[in-house]
Length: 265
Ligand SMILES: Nc1ncnc2c1ncn2[C@@H]1O[C@H](COP(=O)(O)OP(=O)(O)OP(=O)(O)O)[C@@H](O)[C@H]1O
Image 1 (tube, helix red, strand yellow):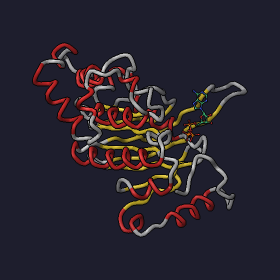
Image 2: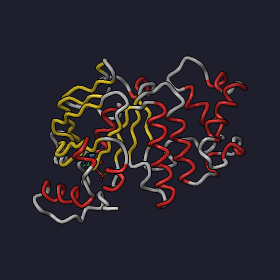
Image 3: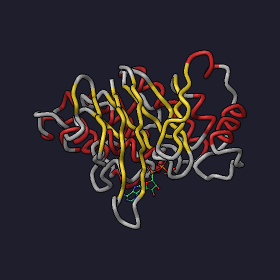
């Protein structure tokens, strides 16, 4: 379970650059729930993920992971509970280490077992099997430097890495946005599969209305630091992209969809 309760985040408070990024957000995800998050530029999507991951400290409110209040827990301590994949394929892995070494680091995250142990023969076989399941042929390149891979290959491996440690919470910050359409679809489908397989509680920020409705079981829309729409079940199931666009227009007082944070496709 993840819960954000009455979460307030203000950047540069009391200065001319003050910006209220989150204004009392309440959102709870049950174990294994997969929620997509959409919203206009500056709506607070990344800030919400940052607060859950511990990179951003809220001025007010509480973040719970499972039964624990983690609001003041450091990001390094939270890393064992929360895995994150970013928009930039270079952000989640180390370019100078091999695929295998990156996986070993991910598996050792938040664990007392060391990196060395993670590279034992039995673990190496497990890593290879997990990479083979991607169907990208990367199991034959386990010794290759991560930096040699394409953005899509790195994002696919970042997802595998996110499932190797004991973290049960997965935060995805537009993790398909920098990929070509084919690879974006591959990574989105892989996300769906891994989330189900590992029972991960997942928040996925996306710019694509289509992706927001096609993946997961619930969609939340943020606007100016607040949740303005939260749909699931039959209502979401029967919703078309056009309906979502219309709702977005209403939220913005009828303004046209000229926001590069939201793509209809
Ligand atoms: N570190 C920071 N310092 C100052 N202001 C910030 C910081 N991070 C975010 N902001 C501001 O807070 C608001 C919310 O930003 P956030 O990145 O959470 O929005 P977002 O919904 O993810 O937007 P986008 O879709 O454009 O990435 C924005 O006005 C942004 O400029």
